[in-house]
Image (cartoon, rainbow, N blue to C red):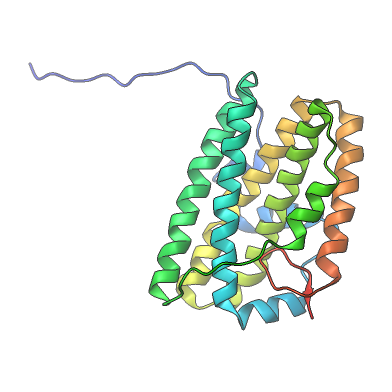
Length: 228
């Protein structure tokens, strides 16, 4: 009788995550949810500039994927006592590093070399409003993470129909994971604070995001404002 290995099952209770994680949810449903969540759409001027500067777009996109994975690893290291966060961040890190590798492949195919880019004002400004008290800091970081992922999803949705087919198809494929990531961050924020506090901080950071996205920006980046 041949030797057959049995699958190993581990009973781990996963935290509550987004309803849009379902593969049955259409891309249109995911994008519509994200657009309702954010307070302002990406200006058409940003989209037009991005389509004319795919080199900077892809280099900064790669940077964003890497930084998202690094943020997840930092949280895994710092918050060992939160099992829900550990599981979700472990999955997020894997996915973000896969996206990083995939963007590098597109850069190679398109003859785009990695070059240093200054950090955008977006992430820097958002983090300036993060509170310093440890419990409050965690909640704020999770809310900022949710908004960054939602904005990324919204920008992929704005870009993909206008991009060269292979890159456009890839950006469209990212909509589901980015939509799930924003909901995962929000779920963790709610697990670590009360509804009223999360809602208040969410409103605050959404207003900051709105201002950064619609106002003039001297540098073009994936999360920049209107290029000047």
